[in-house]
Length: 394
DNA sequence: TCTAACCCTGCGCG
DNA sequence: ACGCGCAGGGTTA
Image (cartoon, rainbow, N blue to C red; front, side, top):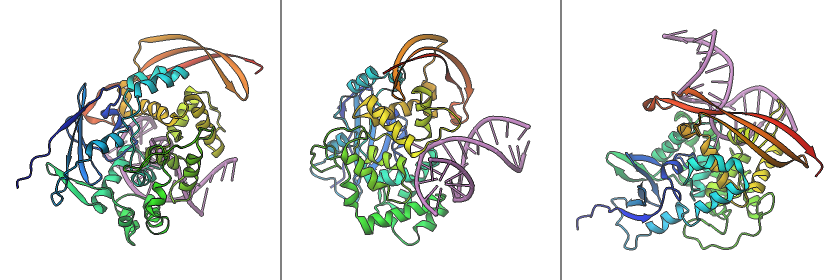
C-alpha cells in the first residue's frame, strides 16, 4: 500500500502561551532546526516532528522512518503536550512573577510565550556539558554533529537528514573522545566520552531518569507528588543536583540546567555569567572587583530568585535570560528617554533598605555583525541608575 | 577559597 | 591586512 504523505494536525494555542520562535531559540535546547521559513523540525522519540505556528494554532506533523510503519495509535499529540509542557497557564505565571518583581514586569512583555520544554534528561545532560565556555550557535553545531555521527537516521526533510540523539551506549566506544576532538569539541570530548561510559555501564540510564521530578517525570511515566519547596529547593531537586555533580564535565551550573530542562525541577536556577550579570545589574548583587562567582554566591543567587519568584523560579529566570540574549536584542525596550521614579524595598545583609531610584534610559545604537543577513542597527538600552539609599533597622 | 588551564571561534581594536 | 586580546550559558586540578 502506498504510504500516505504525513498530515498536518493542529491544536489551539496563542503566542502568549507558546512562542515557538522564542522558545526554540533561547538556548534551552540545541537540536531544533528551521526546516522552512516558519517551520521547525527535530527528531523526538523515534520520529521527525515538525512544528509551525500562526496566531491561533500550533501545527504539527510527525514522520516516521521509512522502515517503520506509522503506528496505528499515534501518540504524537501526547508526546507534544508533554514535551512542550503545555499544561501550565503561562499568562498566569507571568502575572505572578511580575506581581512580585518589578524588573520582571518591565522586561517580560516583549518575551511572552517562553515555555520550559521537558527535554529528555540524557540529551539535556550532554547538551549542557557542551555548553561550558561556549556560545549557543557552536553548541548547536556540536550537538548536531553528535547526532549526525552517532545517532540513527530518522527521516529527511527535502535533502536534509535528521538523526536521533545518540544513546549513552553509542557514545561509549573507545575512539569517541579522539573522534570528538577531531570534530572540534575541544576539552569537552573527554567529558562526553567519560560521562557516556559512566551512564551506560556504571550507573545506567534509569539512574539518570529517576532523578526526575516525580510530578513531571520522563515521557510515559506516571506522576506523583514531590514535596514542599524549601529555600534551597525541594529535597528531590537537591538530591538530583548532588548526584549530577559526580559526572565529569558537570559543575553546579550544568547540573542546574539538567535539573531544570531535563528533569523537570522548575526551581533550579542555573547561574551562568549572564545571569550573574543580571543579578548584579538588576538585583543589586555586589559589583565590586572582588565579587566573583564563588560557590557561596552561586547558591545565594539561586536562593534569592527562588524566594522572589517561587516554585517556578527557573522558568522566570529563563524569561529574563532570554530577554538578555544578543539574538533577541532587537526586541529590547525602545524608549526615547524615560525617567522613572520608583521606590523599592528589599533586604540586604539582613537590613531593610529603602531606595529612591531614578532611572534614565539612554538609547544607544550599536552595530551587530552576528547576524549578517539582518545587518541593521540594533538598539541597546543602557540604564543609568542614581540611587539614594536609606537604611533602617529590620 | 582562589587560580590557571582547557578547545575553539568570532568580534573588536590597533 | 593581520595579529592580539577577550569572551562565549564553566569545569577541573
